Length: 394
Image 1 (cartoon, one colour):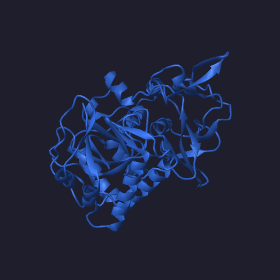
Image 2 (cartoon, helix red, strand yellow):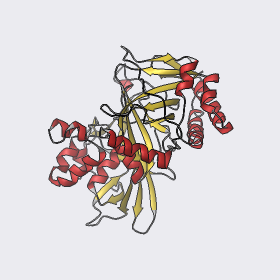
Image 3 (spheres, helix red, strand yellow):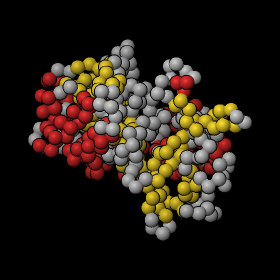
Image 4 (cartoon, one colour):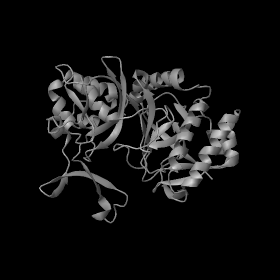
């Protein structure tokens, strides 16, 4: 998600990370990011640099949990399948070996991060532009099973008329890419836009999972991709991403900046929510600029990432699977924002690529999942920092 700059925002985020999600026993050394490179690539680091970098500030048990979930997902795939890691290739079986070995090292305790350097190679992702690290979370939202004057904003499951289209049949360069649409008068056409759906084009077809009472929270639930619904009888329902209308995603923050309604440095999750609440007459027009619409499904445990596994707070990250290997073990350092008086990383930790998103495109974007509820929302909403990513490979 999007966050504000400055020392104050960094301090709030770090304090909450320390209090709720990490031990914060170690602060990494002075921030020394890599310089820009013409083409994205992985660069091997020497043993001394590896040992200086690999200090993990989060509980080991969370890494064990995230690693086990990635291994579960990767074992369903052909073990000799090759995935892209910037300019390198890596096999599924190699990713599993790294995840399994590092998880075992954490269970053994001690300076396990240093032992990773003894067993594997650490590669830095060198990029043309700095890595932008943001955060996302899972909201808890009041809901009803029936429409009423209070609960009148629908949460839809995937519609029966939405079809997935194999784009490789029409575009030689679109291998393994799909689009969404519907059939109208015997022709495949683009699916309805957000404006169409919000205007009621799907109403009355029985696609409603639940009804929400807050249009602002309903909109940002689409951005986050999952939620815990709280019904009036005390029952909680976990819902997660099921699909989309295939339309392009546009950031609300970028729209407000372009329209001169909010300065770039002021944009954060909370300021965006505040703006929509203060200008309800602009809500429909502003949210319609993001044509992408998300459909949901109920799940027993969640949220569920793009690998089909439950995400782990503070360890699961979303990245572009066309340039980074889904399921892989990475190491992430997040720097202070420009202008900050701090010279140390906000945090550094191992993470596992277990999700994806329309807004997370290209090698210069990374999104960290922080968990459920208000604390996770505040951390995610403030995080919009430069960072660096590394990969642990054989």
